[in-house]
Amino acid sequence: MTDLARLDSSAPGFDAALARLTAFESKEDVAVDAAVAAIVADVRARGDAAVLEYTVRFDRVQAISVAALELPAEELAAAHAALPTAERDALTTAATRIRVYHERQRAESCSRSWEMHEADGTRLGQKVTALARVGLYVPGGKAAYPSTVLASLRDWRRTGDRRARVRHGDDPRGRQDRRPG
Image (cartoon, rainbow, N blue to C red; front, side, top):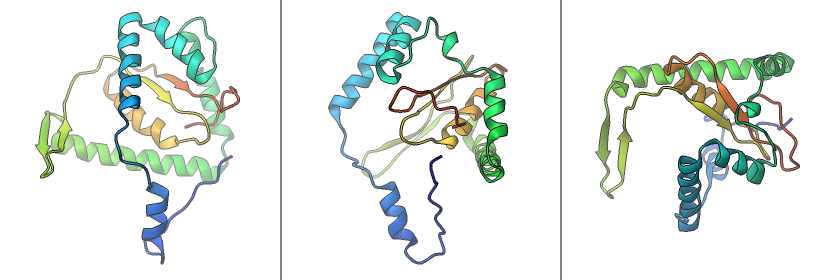
């Protein structure tokens, strides 16, 4: 299990520790944008067949259908129950914080689309569009991100669709990681 870094905003050195944790290269990579656009276009054109091919390519998982990629609810429940109490409590706390934040966001502005422009020309905002169904992809690999699952589930719950579709990425050796998040 991956150890999580815990930062205390009142501790000496917090700013430097946070800066190290969140450091990334902000330069736009045109090649990445082009690759993502090509994948999105392919999935739009070929649908599930393209999704299955990309699942083999990126996750090294062979499936006969997109439905076969779903984790059964019983397996998810068993993984949740198997968590140590501290981790289960941390997930519950995170879920509560995400829910409260988005309830506030919805009350403030989620009922309408909006945008703003920053001084440097950056355009920010949100476009409100009704969703009929949401599929959740949880990245795998070297780290697990429970917050990705929790934040994504917030959008899924809004659809009214009571059956979640979750696909979890595999670890670098092609094994499916059954940790929640």
